[in-house]
Image (cartoon, rainbow, N blue to C red; front, side, top):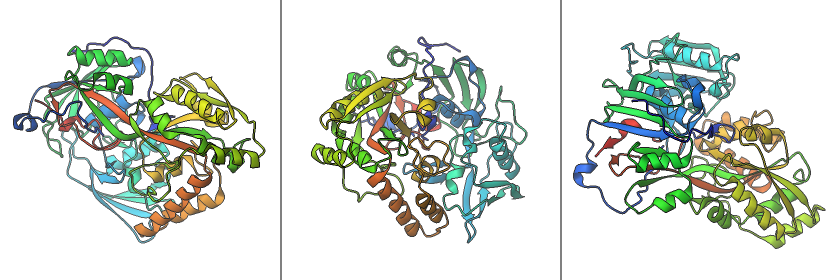
Length: 521
């Protein structure tokens, strides 16, 4: 039954970067709202039933083309219907999915990928030709497919199907992190020739039943799924753009799973026994971006002063209601290549004032761009304004249009609120911190930094490559343009009867929205 829920305000929440990148990426982590332990019976997966999951949506223009995925609901629906060659694990390292494995040559510029035995919903096998067709479709410069940037290192004209289950990917240059391409957001495999997704055919755990854009998608169990048939008979995605409508749907029995609650709502509902709160740890990096090529932030001493102005605990408590952990001005907490040895930065107003004096910016006045486009943005901007005043800096908070915010701050202004979903550190660097990166919001353009990245991609030894990544991150910690003050929990909620929601995995990773592993007690 395609039952629209109330509150269909056009409130888009993009994945990945604030511009729509998370990502990420993507998993569902469990932290129950009560201490009750499930009975042995309820902890044993059961088959059957229909789960209704409510998300924010994209209105009447929604479609099921997985290569156009942008919103969280797009990604969740695509994950139900389709597969990628790989996906990101909890540490953001690539985990094989349709690919059973991969192997590079000595030069790291040719990778051989083997496919596992899998079939599309119409019974056709998933083959190397399907993979090449899908990637070439994504890479088409005439199409606006988000994963196209991730495929840039691949020479798809020279890549080939060795046989039905083997793909040889030729790269334009050595690329040690090539498996991240296979796990890229939106890089789903579709049948060769597919270009109409009104009634999509994929290889995912559920198959298509019906779709009403902006309202509902109904799918059913795929009994032949290569990773095991789902427990659920049916899964329905519903749309309610207002958080209050999603919570009401859950409390009123219209939905069993509600995506994206704000921390205040979660705190108000936690422990009451009516719903279970699920916290996806480290799902969203929270921070501010400083334009490193524009005054006053073209002087690294001013950037360093702002690192020291921020009281991170106060920002977590005030902007996120405590639903997160403090950041340390480098991306990717808890993931591969994260530099755990860096001293935790704390507020030091006297040192900040000294740095501003050295830079000739003692009575600095600056505009901070923000928007209600993401939870906590406006609150965090107000808190930073108060903290900066203690260091003699006057911050004017400018609240912008949430529909154009991410585009506006990419090139405009000097200081802005920023958020990113989970993604590999390598992807964060390549997409945002190289001289030619297309989403370089800090305008960090350093040829020697680019050279370190190129060197890392040519380095086969993991330990040596890790050392190079950590050199890059120490540089960013010292003088970069990202003031990363926290890592927020992403919060979903379920009815008490929902079981199997994965624990300890951030949004945009493999286990987020894994409805094929969920069951109803």
